[in-house]
Length: 477
Image (tube, rainbow, N blue to C red; front, side, top):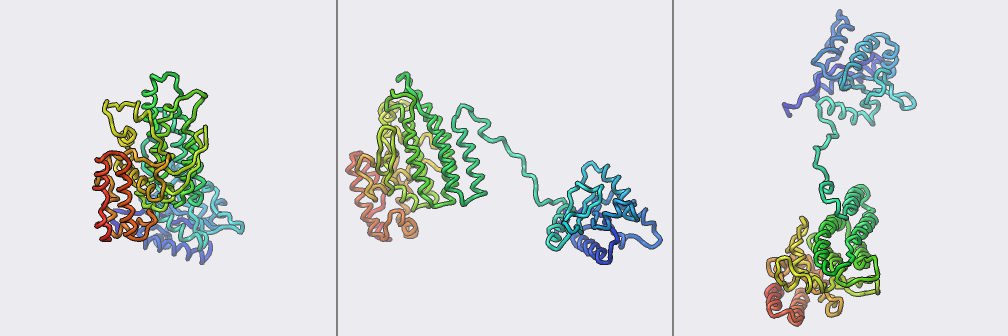
């Protein structure tokens, strides 16, 4: 028992309606006492010869008595409203105290009876007061718990601690992704209320996000400012990307449905070439293509992190149908990883250095998500590359060439070392649609040969050979 928890001392005001009602009140008083509540009750605290009016007045006005429990039945209401008998005397005393009680917490109506229409019997002076219903067996226990909580100051519902203003109120109002933030909050809230409607709710969210994405389009009036404008747009889209990551993490925790994700990528693709005029240059869309490549990487990274292997496999195996506003295209996941000529060849790095992959460098420099790390992005890039080869999605115009390949190493591609574990191999076989270690062994050896023939240089080929397990390692499984 908690010795520091002390209940309010109470006085019970009731009418001698019937023997049955008096027994009801007596049982309530005894139970309160057994639960640690000090009770002032006429059957225990008054004696023959005492003036009951004085007893009642003293009890109501006693500063030690913090609560007066007014037991309301038909007889009590009639006597209180007509000022009859002892109840009438109490009414004069109590009603005056009620009106002087600023906090309106001392007098607690307990409904012990209702009329044939279900209306509570309650005196006029207490009408409008929040009461506790103990009028029948169905409500008695819930009512008693509310009463005990009231007396011990431990309510069922407690006001939460005041938090901080939402972060979006403090951010630059020029950031256009604010509607997606509202949509994310709506999505999160509605999923909690209607989890079975998550696919519909997800489609509503992605529609808003795609609309926000279109607002990052770039109109070029001065090609000399193109580098500056693209860098600014790249920076601005970080906020929208992080909103997408939050949405996706909620979504994939609740469902295995791949169709919503596939539909989203097919629907966002045509927005890449959003423009207001017929005059344009391909370079002005590089930041839009970059964004789509980036969120695909984050999608696979998050799916892999949450062990959604079948969903990843479905994304890789899917044949996509998209439009860029000029023509209809179809192909593998590599459609979403276009070579960005301006970023790679015309957009010098802020530090003035030349990189093997400027796209890869930018991807990692802006990787500030709390959910997905830089290493997880690189690993996702590698997995897409390997899986595309596994499912015959490599070699065409829509091949996924990994932008982060210069950063491949043993530290960030943990999959390569974990695959040596039989337990891990068994858990992710469905990712590759394989059943035996021999199939994995064959895949890895053929992939090494394929990679070395891509012309990425001997250093890259050696790096892949060191990262991936040997035939001996796989055979040990």
